[in-house]
Image 1 (cartoon, helix red, strand yellow):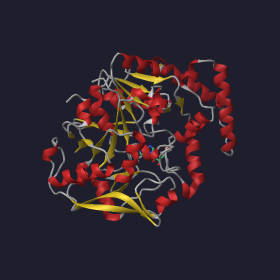
Image 2: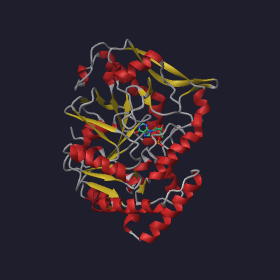
Image 3: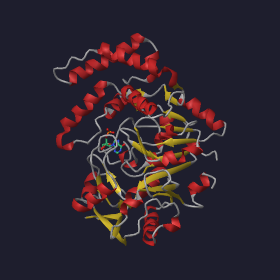
Image 4: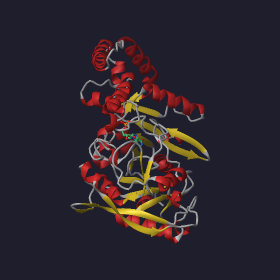
Length: 433
Ligand code: IMP
């Protein structure tokens, strides 16, 4: 197989992309992250051991695979080194396997402060960010005053001037604050030295691999409904988590993307503020949260939980051109007497079947549910479609019809092995099965 594929989130994040990327990685030469930062939390279980990755691509758990951090990613050097040290401590070799784009922008300590401050200023209208400084770092990038990885190896005087300007702007925003720019520069330079051996031209590297027919997996973080352009703005992250981000965030042409796999949970979750049309409250929500262990991998925050929303996934399928879905956490629904999926939104103006741009329209929307019988036989650990209880298969079929995309992978547990790859599906074709 020499097709490059993108794996990305189809809902509001935390769909289990880490597990799916980890599962597919043996078929690829490189795994490349194209956006986001250490706001992401990709949890991967390997033989009962839990790994949580934030910035380093999930492919790192497979020796021999190169992991790429693209120019579209924002890097907090301290978080990066912390994660690398943690991985090395658990026996995962990172050195020599990581390539960091020289064009990636850096998250500086004052970005974190500004993130927290901006949230406090918004009060009740807060976004519920991960407080990692992601938004302010992307603001500096778009404002053309960001510090890039390559700046750490260039003209020191130019770096000093840029940091001095940025720090004095920050001192004007944060009252009674007189942060000194000098230690910021010293820290940056020290981080640069540590990073130097891993820094390079990602676009050249990926083009070389592709020319040699060695496939690349493009790994998305966050998700389509958190995309700065296509998500539930302003309750979004500050990057393009949808497929467009692959080209801009790695310097690869659109034709390099041979397939797109969307990851979706068999229900819906969201962490942070903003609309979630199928949200459940009380006991039903608690049941999903506990059974699915729905707590943020980065921040530990409890996730909001609701039924599967086919309007959302249909929207993601269109925006990203999804070829197939990887449906995760089916086993979390085990034992429910009934399962529901949302096929449209009822509003005073009629039923919406397309995801609206205006959040006020969404606030007035009532989900239209289709109710299906649940299953009492556990699906946990099942690896063949035909072994699933008939009700679970029926649920998947209806979910595929309503979402307009085939479920080529069904995950029935957190471990690599607890997975169904549908025979004769798009993904089976990609993997040459
Ligand atoms: P930020 O990316 O920290 O600015 O947060 C913006 C929004 O994206 C908030 O609602 C976060 O909870 C959400 N978010 C950011 N990263 C993730 C993630 O990896 N999973 C789920 N939600 C996320």
